[in-house]
Length: 273
Image (cartoon, rainbow, N blue to C red; front, side):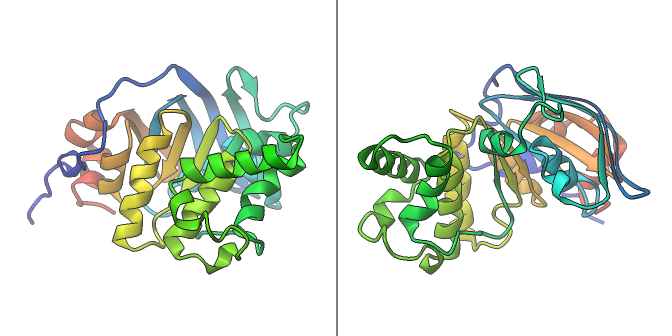
């Protein structure tokens, strides 16, 4: 069998894989997750930097998305789910009883696998969050937030003349950028992305990857991806999960070219999947 070359070599020119990353934004220690009696994550500990992209890779069902949902307490919505351990954002435990999950999810935005715009206009999709969180005091201020968010998401030039048309009328790639604009509009500090390109064509995927690279200048981004080539292109840090355990993590270049663990080597070279 021919062994694939390390995927870090496939990185696109716009990537800055070896660029220095910011200080730790998210600190995770000894996190276990159970769905009823079934344990989905086992003793996960990791430091995730700010103003950088951290990619979670690993086979299907290994716990990547489960762990991502722990960061903004989305697992709270799943009956029978139980999370143990400590997850801190800037030193604050997200599971502390004093933390309002609604406020947490504004601070830690989420972009899902399938674009999920609200059944509202493009404008209202982006304006919804700032309006309910009281981030604007006037119509003109709200309009400014919407415009700025759409510009950051690389969508303003395509929709500025149809802001009052349904967001669901956009293409798949545009809808995903609209959802990213919606997340940005509430001034988050962290953006979680659960396979944001898996439902998109290669052109839309390339645009989202370029956008991720731009957004990391301002946000801590954590992305779950089944595409190792994508992880190599967009991330500065990579974490490999297998059967509910975090096997290893480090700089993307190190993980893809010189992994310490044989299981990581087997996965990135295609021996296991």
